[in-house]
Every structure is written in C-alpha cells, then in structure tokens.
Length: 248
Ligand SMILES: C[S@@+](CC[C@H](N)C(=O)[O-])C[C@H]1O[C@@H](n2cnc3c(N)ncnc32)[C@H](O)[C@@H]1O
Image 1 (tube, rainbow, N blue to C red):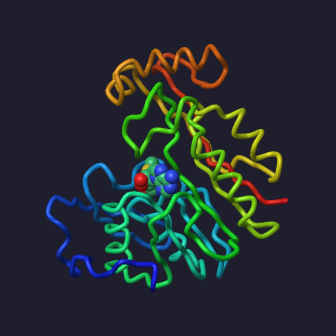
Image 2: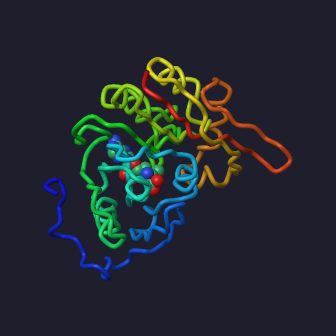
C-alpha cells in the first residue's frame, strides 16, 4: 500500500511506550485498539457503530479516523476497500498498527485534510469529526470553530462531490454545534434522516475543564440560536445524533 508509511511501524505485539489498549465490541466481533492516551475511540464512536449500515463491497472512507476503529469496523462489516484520513501522525501510526493486529488488510490510512488525499469515487463516508464550539482553539480532537461547523461544512461539500449518487454520508453531530446550519447544508444535496439519537448530559465543570469560560460561551451560543441544549432534573443535556445523508 503505497500511501502508508510502514517503516516506523512498531512490530506486532510491541506497541509504543505509553500506548494504552481497549476492546471495542461490534456486531462483527471485537476490535483491539491501541493508541496514545487521549486518542482512543469513545462513546460517540460506539454510537456510530450501532447506527451505520455498510453496503457489501462499499468503497468507504473515514475522514478524521483517529486510531481507525470506524474504518476497521467498516472493513469488518463488508466494505470492499476502506481508507481513513487524519492529520495526527501519532493517531495514524496507531491506526495502521490496529489494522495489522486485527488482521484487516483492505484498509489504508493516509495523512490528509478531510477527503483531500483520498482517491476515487466513494459509496460510503462515516465522519465523527471535531465539532465542539469554542471561543478559540483548544484540543484539536474536539475544537470545531466558533460554532462547531468549521470542519463539518467543508466535509459536506467534499462528500457531495465524492460520493456516487445514492451513496451515503453518516455524520455524528452534537446539537451544540449549530445543527440548523449543518442541516441546511445537508438538505441542499442529500436526503437526510436521523439514524440514531440520544441525550448526552454534561456539566459546567466538564466544559470549563476543556477551556475556561466554555460553558458561558455555550450559553451565549444558545441565546444566539446556534447551540441547542436543555436542562431537566438530571442536569444539562444536548442531543447527540447520527445523520444518514443519501446523495440525491
Ligand atoms: C473526535 S476525534 C474522532 C476520531 C475517530 N473518528 C474515532 O471515532 O475515534 C476527531 C479526529 O479528527 C482528526 N482531525 C481533526 N481535523 C482534521 C482534518 N482537517 N482532517 C482530518 N482529520 C482531522 C483529529 O486528529 C482526530 O483524530
């Protein structure tokens, strides 16, 4: 696989110092996942796994693949050829290692911005990208720009030009990231349905722990109509959704 940098791969069974390990259960078996702390898949990845459909032999891609779990899952679920793209070298290295220890061969990982380095027409795109709104950059794993859509809107554009007609984009979106703006962009070129949704409770401390002042920023965004969240007796919550968008 010419796009892959294999020369610096750790040997099988000898992951890099400091890497941690997880098992991700899927309907097609467990995926062993290694990677640097802070880069491993999380509850949102698992939520995606439970709400995407992978057509047999699909040409599939995961922009923002991190340690590669969703890309590996698509390969296990029957995709024909899968690529994952990310800007983070350490995550890509883990993704390649994870492909090798899980013995998944029809997947490659490339360094690139969204879909820019992924070639060929695609049947399926699965994206769980950074989209937390914040007043300024913080953790690159989460920061999505002032309203959360800095990466989502270009991705929707690129997906529309790279998918075949009838192809699918699955997009994970928390309702604090200007869902109305995202839906307008999706509806222009896709037929959209909600494939899965759930409440995600959060606290002021959780968000201020990511960036001081972030909770107040979210409240301002809510007042301006770009972040949607609510409060009940259990606390604050927003809605996490997986959108299934089929190219018209
Ligand atoms: C929230 S993490 C999700 C990772 C993975 N999809 C998962 O489910 O575990 C977002 C990922 O997007 C990557 N990323 C951020 N900006 C990117 C860009 N412009 N192009 C490609 N990947 C990007 C980050 O490096 C990070 O690995």
